[in-house]
Amino acid sequence: MPSVSTEAPVIPGASAAPSAQPSPSSSSAPSQLSPGGPGYRRMSFALFAAGVATFALLYSTQALLPAISADLGVTAGQASWTVSAATGALALFVLPLSALSERFGRRTLMTASLVIAVAVGLLVPFAPDIEWLVALRAVQGAALAGLPASAMAFLAEEVRPKALVAAIGLFVAGNSVGGMSGRIVTGWVAQLWGWRAALGAVGLMAVVCAVVFRVLLPKARNFTSRSLSPRALAKTVGGHLADPLLRRLYAIGALFMTVFGAVYTVIGYRLVEAPFNLPQGIIGSIFLVYLVGTVSSAAAGRLVARLGRRGALYLAVGTTAAGLLLSLSDTLAAVLLGLVLITAGFFAGHAVASSSVSRTAKTGRAQASALYQSAYYLGSSAGGTLGAVAFHTGGWEATVLLGLVAVLGVVSITLYGTHAARTEAARRPVPAVQR
Picture 1: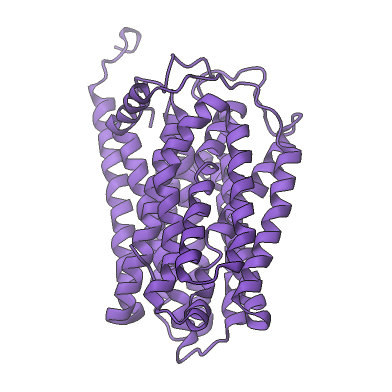
Picture 2: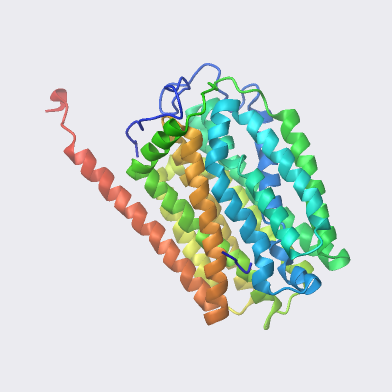
C-alpha cells in the first residue's frame, strides 16, 4: 500500500525445546550485563550503532520523494512505494527471521542482516528507474527485519532485568538518531548534488555503523540454540497472540507508529507550501527534533521507575496529543515545538511498550518482539498512507485528527489494561497470614 510519503502468565510453547534462557522477571543470571559492568558499554554502543543504521536506511527516501518524482517522472504515489516497500517487507519478514535467530543466534543474524542491508544501500543510488528502486528498497527492508526483534531478544537474554528498559531505550535512541541524521543528510546532499548522491551518503554512513556494531558487540553468553520447527513456531506465536497483555502492547506500538508515520510523511509537504515555503535543506534540518526522541527513549527506564509502565504511557500519549494540537498553528515556531512534543511522546511510548514485550514474554522472546515489530511497522505503513490521504483530503487538520484518534486508541487500551489488572488482583485469594 503506497504512502506519500503487569505481570503476565507464562506463555506456553517455545520455538522448540523448553527454553533454558533466564527469565527477565526472575533473578539475574551471573553472566548478565549491568550498567558499569564489563561489556555493558560496548554492547550499548554496538546496538546504538545498529539502531542508527536501521532507521537511516529504512527511511532514507522519505525526505526525497519530491526529488525522486521529478527526476524519474513519476507521481508522488508511485515514489512513495520506495518507503512503503521497505517498511512493508520489514513487517513481513521480521517474524521468520526472528525464528532463524533462535537457531543461529541473535548476533549472527543481526550481523548478516546489517551487512545485506548496507550492501543493498550502496546499490540503491544506481537504480535506473522506479521499478528497480522499489525492488531494491523491498530487499533492503526485508534484510533490516533481522535486526529489531533479534536485538530486543539479545538484550532480554544478556542484560539484567532492572537495566532492561534503559538498555532497550538506548537502542531505540539509536533509531531516533538514525532517523534524524538520515533525513538531515539526504536533505542537504540532495539540495546540493541530487537524491542519488544523498542515498549514497546514507549508505556510506551505514557502512561505518555496521563496522562499529560488529567490532563492539560482545558474544552472547545466555543464548541457547533451538531447532527450527514450523509447528513449534506456530505454537509460540499462538501463545503470544493469546496473551491479552501482549496483544495490548502490540496494538499500542502500532497506534503510536501510526501517529508518527502520518506526521513525518506529511510534514515536508506542509512546510514546502505556504505560509512556510521552506527549501529542501531546511526541511531536512527540521529532523533535528529527533534528538528529543533520543533523550526521551533513553529516559524511559527512569519514567517507568517513577510512574510505572501505565503512568509512563499516559505521559507519552499526553505529550503526543499536545504536540499534535500545537502543530495546527501557522507559526513555524509553534509547529516545531509541536514536532518536538510529538517526537518525545512517541519515542518514550515506543521504548516503554517494546521493553514491556521483552519482560512479559517468558519464552520465545524473539517471536514476541517480532510480532511487536510487525505491528509497529504496519502502523508505520498505515500511518503514512492514511496521513497522506487525510492531508490531500482535508489538509494538515485532517492529519492531526487522524493522529488524535490513534492517541485516543492508546489511552483506551491502557485504561482497559488498568481495569483488567485491578479486576484480576481483586479475584486473587488473600493469603491466610493477612486475614
